[in-house]
Length: 198
Image 1 (cartoon, rainbow, N blue to C red):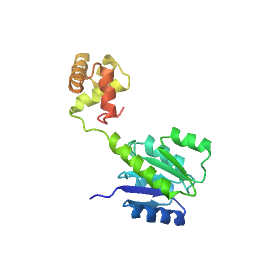
Image 2 (cartoon, rainbow, N blue to C red):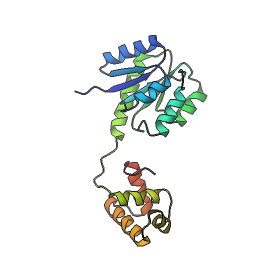
Image 3 (spheres, helix red, strand yellow):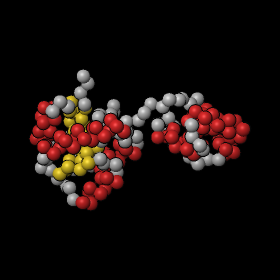
Image 4 (tube, one colour):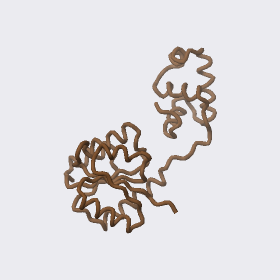
């Protein structure tokens, strides 16, 4: 059985040791990093869940989360939970705006933390992306990426160095494969599935 992996980003060794001890007793595999630069590196390959302090050397927890989500290092399906002594409302609002899934204040109530982790992991499994039942050719993917970026068929034809008729041919193929009603719906569906990256 493969263990659920949790990355703990915490610079206080006493707290990180306690987190590791409690979570390993619960059957999780826990790794610890103590600063922002190491945290970004440790996110690849992505763990199943991230616990992160706010106040860290190098990058703050906010900066780690912003870069991890914004640069596509950490998929949206991986829960990110802040654990911090700085639990004021303004920090919670900022954290949620950056894509944080939960916010736990210190001192840590482990009787509360463990159920929160289990709940977030259960939700993540439900939301895990479904493997698409279709595939796009390289040219279809390229064309649809420009559709997702709001380009018209004539503009896409110019960008790709093909005729407008060829662009329309690829767009129609994608619409048929996805079962979408419009090119915009097809582009949105493929972006959600991770087939294209607008």
